[in-house]
Structure formats: structure tokens, C-alpha cells
Amino acid sequence: MVDWVISSPYHSIGDDPVVIWLKMLIGALMVLLIQLFAQTKFFYLAALAPLFPTFTLISHFIVGTERSAADLRVALIFSMLGVIPHLIYTFVVFFSISYVSLYKALLLGVVAWTVAAAILVLTWQYIQA
Image (cartoon, rainbow, N blue to C red; front, side, top):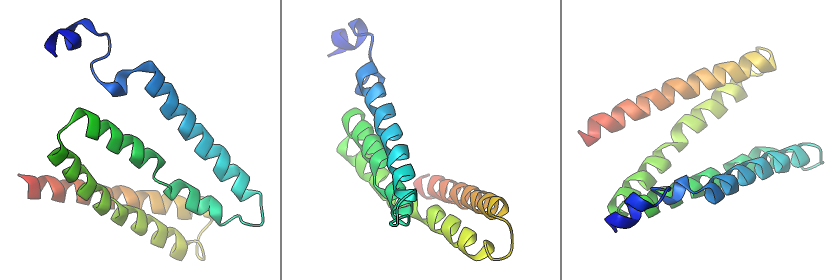
């Protein structure tokens, strides 16, 4: 096992160029899918597409192949809690869009997401300590 790690130019499956290109392709396809949905009468699906667990699948695959099952379970719990900042972002944009421009509403949502995510990370670190 150690000999393979030392002799291999890739120390983990996430470092493999094929996997990196695959992740980039998946991300690009999701952006195209969002754009296509936005141009149809089903424009609301453009808001659902990024919630498909594309990047979550990638992150869980990488954690699951590089860490223990217990570590993956911890990552899964944190993923569930990660929905909270997204909900806060969505609520802030939803309620502020009636009062400010789109750009300001999105910026407020990003600020709210950042604050919520920071609180989540700090709380998580405190709980894990």
C-alpha cells in the first residue's frame, strides 16, 4: 500500500486528472442545464437544477474513498446542516427582492449565506471539540 502511494503520481482518487476533468464536465453540464431550463416555460426548474446533488455526490465520493465510513457519516451530517445557510439565502432573496434591485437582493442573500455558513462552521467546530 505504501509503495503504491509513494510510486504513484496521484495520492488519491481526487487527484486523478480523469476524475478532475469529469468533475469539471459535470459542473459545466449543470450550468448548461440551468441555462436551458431558464429559457423554457419551465423556468422554475432552473432553481431546482443546482439543488441536484451533483457536487454533493462528488464530495461524498471523494470523502468516502479517501476517509473512513465514520468520517463519511460526519460529512453527511454536516451536509444536512449545510441546507440551513441555503435556506437563509433563499429567504433573504425572496423577501428583499420586493424592496431592492435584483443585484442588491442577491448580494444580501450571499452576505446572509456567508454569515450563516460561518456560524455553522464555528458551531460545528465547537461541538466537535
